[in-house]
Image 1 (cartoon, helix red, strand yellow):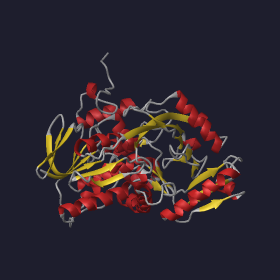
Image 2 (tube, helix red, strand yellow):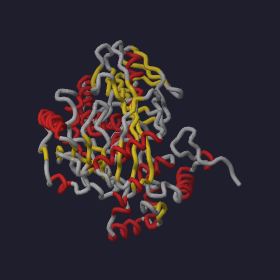
Image 3 (cartoon, rainbow, N blue to C red):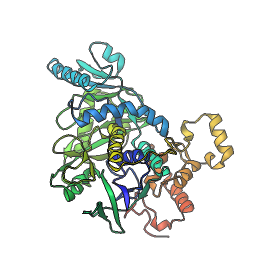
Image 4 (cartoon, rainbow, N blue to C red):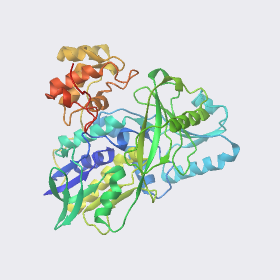
Length: 474
């Protein structure tokens, strides 16, 4: 029997697993997809919110501010990209200023430091490309940007190195109480555990409702995005929001930690929990609303579009902790925005609650750090020479758009919880994320996967499951 099983290997589940791996526990993570970071965590705004938006006293407010505080230290320990670039919330009329001031007061109540309202020419010194229709803005210097793929993978690898087991392609189909815990059924095996952690994203309501009479309901909220080329990456330096509505924080424009420019998301409640398709209507809305913030936003430099789902619970707050009528069943449910920002705090909070319940002892040999794959594109000539001297594969460029080398891809395939698919390599190395969107490098990456993992080429997939890439031979 396991001590703890976490359902879901998104950023929340991996953050909880990493914090639980600090303790002497038999710990496992079950994930329905073929890799970590395959759901909501892979398709979002990549924003570390300052914490002024959530209502004071809510779990969202508490976890957001605490998670923001922890992000810089965590990024250094686990070697993933994070930048505190600051965020702006734009107001477009004098009538809207009271609502902006209310947002400021909310942020102060939540404990967000250094907030201030800015008017006049200072707004355009902060961001020269802002629309001249902007009348005032809220400036939050502690806002940031992060790489959600790298962050989730880093948390998972560190948890794995500290003893957590990961089982992929393992969807949980049923949960039943047993003496001293729960039995989890999957197509391949049955697991027994003292504690269940429900971090299943848009499916978290289904698992809660299997064991608790206190039913919850999650609506998938689709958000569509447009990603622009690195030539557009310096169009803004801050994350630029519009005043939020009840459906979310509106259409933003932001640089990414990798140098691109991102606009979005829309906010559309749908029923399909797999509905991550983009729509012409949604992308047109992104373009229209983005131009309100900055009329000359370079949307003509778009290189791709994508959509993600937010897990919006009817109560409009995170559901965290042990279910009242299901001892040993811990929820991390309804984790919509600001879930990415909150993940470090959610992980620490739930892990401590579970450790206290089990009387678990902290490990003496817990390792809090890991190193990412060396990035040739961001290395100095001296660093590149040293990499090539150690392994000549770091001198062989596979992805020209992002300057990703054979050495980086081999590292991604061989490391703990290594990549198994084209998208797995892409999330770890950025091979295929550039201007040509994998048009040139895919065959070379496929050859490396085949060579390193001994995979039958006909079984290679884009993202696991039925997404095979080849259909025959000539």
